[in-house]
Structure formats: C-alpha cells, structure tokens
Length: 430
Image 1: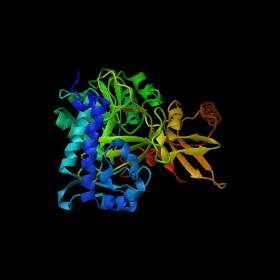
Image 2: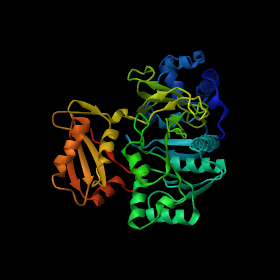
Image 3: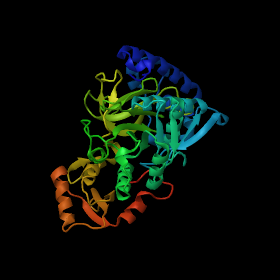
Image 4: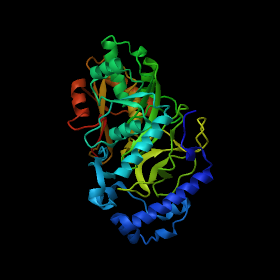
C-alpha cells in the first residue's frame, strides 16, 4: 500500500484533536497579524479565545468572496518582504483575486500535491506530463510542479493546448501520468485518431483530471468520463482544488470521492443560513485553512455545492470524502420553473456527437427571469438538429434552451480568449 499521512488513517476523535489544536494556533495568529480578521471579529463582537472546539466554529462569522474583493490585501498577515509568490484566482465568477504566498506556504502547497498525487497512486518512479500552464499567475501549475518535485518523481512541463507537441513529448519521454483538463484529453484522442497515433499503446496509463467533473453524484463516470475511458484504456482520477484553500481533494483508486487532508483544512457543509446541513445533504463547501502563513482564511464559503461521505474508504483512509461538485451556488439557473446547474447542461451536450464545442450563456430576459442560450460549434449539423437537440433537453431536464449554431472556430475563439488559463464554457450575464 502507498504511504498515507498518519493522520489520514486515524480515528475521528484523533483527527478532531489535531484540528482543534491547529485551530487555536490559527485564531491566535490572525488576532495578531490579520487586519481583516481583527476588524471582522470586532464588528461581530467575537472573542476568539472562547473558540475551543470544532463545534464552536459555528459561532464565528463566515468569510465570503465579497470580503476578499473588498479587503483583498487586508488578509495578508506578513510583511511584504516575506512574500515570495503572487497568484490570482481564475476569476470564474468575477474579477481575479490576488493571493500572496510565503516560502512556508509554498512548502505547504508542495506537501498537499505530493500527498494528493500519491493518493492518485503516483510515486517517485512516475514521470508526470503537466498539460496545464505554470505561468500567468496560476497557482495550480506551480502546485503540481512543486508537489511532483517533493515526491521525487519526474515532470515534463509541456503546458496547455498543442496536441501535436503533447504527443511528440509522450513519444520522446514516455511519461506515465498526465495532469490535464478532461475536455482537452478528448481533443488529444481526436488528434491521435486523425493522425494515426497509436494512443492506446502509449506510455500514459493514468490521468489526473482537473477543472471539470468526470463523475456523476453516484461516482459513476459522467458523459465526459465515459467518452475518455470508452476510447482510451487509462485510469482517471478526479481532483478538486481552489486557489483560496491552497489544498486539494483527490480520488484514490476506489474512485469514491476526493479525500480530505485534515492537517490542511477544516471543512464544513453549510446551507444558505450558514448552518450545517444534515449528513447526506448537499451544502456549500466551507473551509478554514490550517498552516497558511500569508493569507489564512476562516470559514470561507467557496461557492461550490457538494456532499460529504464519512464512511472509511477501502484505501485505508478514514477521513471524509467529498462528492463531485454538483454546481456553483452563484451559477444556479431558474429556468421555466426548473432549478439546474451548468454541469447538467454539459452532460447532455457532451453526448451529442456532431457538437464540436459550445458556450452556455445565461441572462435576464425582459420579464426579469433567467434565459439560456447555448451556442454550439458544428460544421455539418444534421437536418432538424435544433428540434432534436431541444427534444433531448426536454427528455432529460423537462426544459429546452435556445440553440444558436456557430462554427467551431468561432466558439473556440470565445472559449480561449487571450490570457485565459482554461476553456470558458459558461458565461453569466445576469
């Protein structure tokens, strides 16, 4: 069995004790060093010295994206000359936010990816092909590189895009694991088939999938996961992370949810009233970062909706696991009486063979309700494609959005504007 951090196989009581110790250290640290939390606690009449247990956390106010936007640099807890790396969020729901990391934070980031990639069965004997950018103020690419380096494995920093270069690198260097956005893997397969590359016999045997879901809520592969595995006999591992928490939830071989690293994060699952949801219910993932020096966060609501699974895993870990992300809270659409999240639309669009690419746009119509337009890229649409596609949506979701046909080239330009770090498939104009 692969080496697992000691705490991740311990009893819930032992894990709670460790987290409560780290929580006390965190609260003392922000009280002394964080301009934001000094003010935040004072405004809410909080004496943080009375917060002793994990259950006491509910007495602390939450931290939101708006707090970060309005007071971005007030979260920094160290002098400027102690900051080593500056990164920004991807700006999925607004303007990017700046996060500053110290040398200690970079070590924590490396540790997180080391144990996360090990959870996905990576070892020092592997060579990882990094198919994501390491520049453009992107935390994830740097995190993967640092984690692989700490693991002692090899890494090939190819970057995103460039299918021909990716395959040339695979042929030359024989990497064993790829780290990539799953929709790009589909493009790799299409390029290989068009150019008679025997991709099924390549050295790549495992892929760590980032940025897009590959599983349904019950952990079966969704459409995207099926498309990849039906074509290519590789093992897929899903991972979820964010710049704000500087940590990841990564699947093991069991493929039953992303494993929590309790030494790095305290996690809660909250409803709209900021109360804990019942076991088995979906809630907004809320994190308290442990061991962060530059910009620690307390009860930060990520905006991502998921479920927690608490039963021990067959891999030996006893820590909780999170389900695939069901959607982002701010992206929920109320369309003709139906509530849905973009992933439900993606899953349908990914099943249609003649659709090459797409962008979903949501806006407020003249009567003040949500409207959906789906711009699809297709060179040779079949007859009556609009009606057939709408019928497909009605069968799955009971509602049908407006369909607008464009060329794949036009959609591609909109998906990947200059400075974009990952494809844009959802635009919210509400």
